[in-house]
Length: 194
Image 1: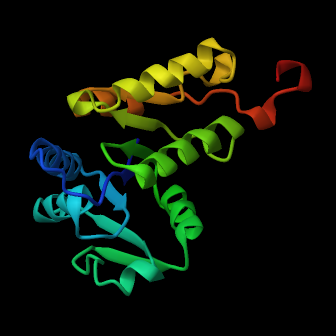
Image 2: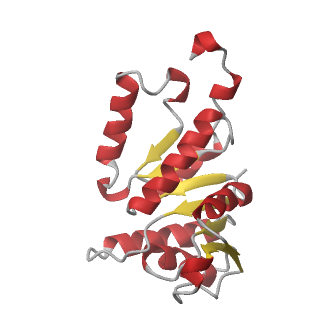
C-alpha cells in the first residue's frame, strides 16, 4: 500500500498551462486517495501547484528543501511539515526514507536526476519501492524510447527492464504501482548473472 509518495517534478511554470493543470490534478488525486505527498518543498512551478492543491484538498504534504533554497525565499511554509536539509544528497535520501513509492511528472534536469537516482537505487537494491513515470502529454516518450534502447543494447539487464512503471493516466499508473513486485537487485545477483 502506498501511504506516501515522493513526487519529482519541475519548479518551472512552462508557458503551456496544461503542465500546471496536470500538477494540480496529481495533487488533488493523491489527496483524495489519502496518499501523502513528499516533494521538494518549493512554492514555484509544478512543485508549488502539486503542494497547494494537495493541501487545499486536505492532504498531507511534506516538503524537503536544502538550506540554500530556504535562503532564497522559495520555501513553501504552508506544508504540513517542512524539513530543511543541508544539500541535495540529503534531500534525495529523505525522499527515499519518507516515501513508499516515487512518482515523476514533467520537469527538467533536477527532476531527471531524481528519477534516475530512484531507478539506479532500485536496480542496485537500496530500495524495493515502485518507480512511476506519468507520461502525460507524451512528455516522456523519448525518455521511454531511450530506456528501451539501453535495454535492447544490453546496458539494462532483463531483471531491471521494468523498474520504470509508466502510464499516461495517473489512476492507471497508481494501480500499476500498487501491484508492483520487486525485481532481483544487483546486490543479490551472482557474478555470472551480471
